[in-house]
Image 1 (cartoon, rainbow, N blue to C red):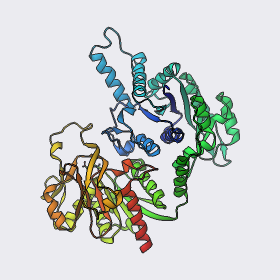
Image 2: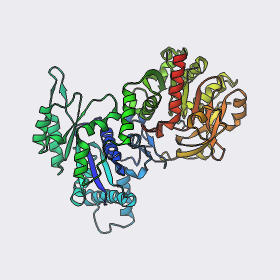
Image 3: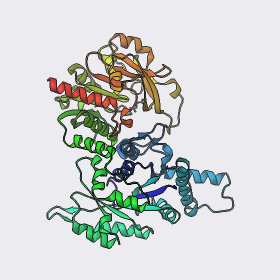
Image 4: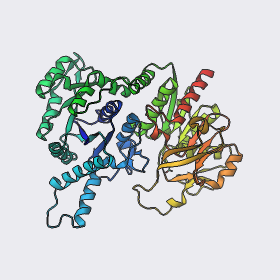
Length: 536
Ligand code: GLN
């Protein structure tokens, strides 16, 4: 069977949750047992997301194959429960550089190279290339940005051309505001968005409406009339308690049935085991038996998207441990000065996530010290692990001024240091220790082993600095345990406290946490937080 295609386009504004809608569509098809592949187009001219600031663009997501991609890839994997690859990320940067390279090698000799047809052909060639190689049943293509932008216009044109040759179902995500005073829903913006799409030569098969309140019948009728669609094709995407409820909410409206029909697919499995299990997890998120407060201390906490995977990993772990998570986002610079850790009082667990640069480092170290002394369960991720080592070196192992050479190049105790292989690298794109790395766990009486239940694990990485083995013995003698190392034994991957629950990993386990298979370390943290709270 040749692959079928779904294209998701957003109207009016960003931030409507196109990634979540795309992922929910993917999940519905996955429930049916179809092999679905997402593709994301981003119009920016960066080759990938590796050099972007999480404060502006949200977190940089890393895949097994070392690709640094848009955070929507995280949403796809969290819903799909499968690892995907970097070729599914198509950026303006990749497209332009490939067309220009081909021009330089003489592929277009004698011709003036143009957006149409050369760039639009390149887009279609890439999509068909992926379909031919992987042979998925359905490919779901999410177009970044909004209809009417210059940045994605050539991509939308490519999709219009594509639909002449292939079976394509177009889905338009739009916004329906509710006027507060009377609760009336306004369809005019959605109509304008729809018209822009028509101007681009595309008539959507479905209109999905983001709104604060459930879509009223009147609203559906009006939009259906303007868009030449059946009322059943105007889909409600109003606020839900958890985003993981969206696939079920879409199915309740019969969206899956119509989609399957439009795609010419035939499977009829609806209420299978997978759907029931998903529902159970959603129930656990909505009605947990207990609650824990987890503080996340970082330097990008004012933009929650910077830590999207950490947040979701905690929600997944909460569903597994039957605990609701109360998030406490703390800006690390607020914990500096007089070592004031007041904002952390009353927390049940602490996470220090990854990060770069020296702003807020002292505050993070103060938070770690507080957690160690007050026996608050702690999970340190990448930078959080490095600072756990720094804090221990300074405050327990008698190494005053200990630091990472990222923050103090002249310290005598550079317990975290630049890897040999990193020295001399000048390029910034794709040059860190990236992607999936195998790690050997040491011993079986460790937090890491108890969490994973096996002695070889694989997690994703994105960093330049490492635990400095020169200080390993001294730190271990002082009570810091090294509980995981790279497969070749050369690099430290996990460290732990002995007196209470505290673990740091050089990896980013949050990047592999999925709703149906939560990251083991996050589950352990939430369980430890629960026990501490219940024991108090
Ligand atoms: N800045 C640190 C490094 O490069 C940590 C990076 C991270 O937390 N991802 O090693």
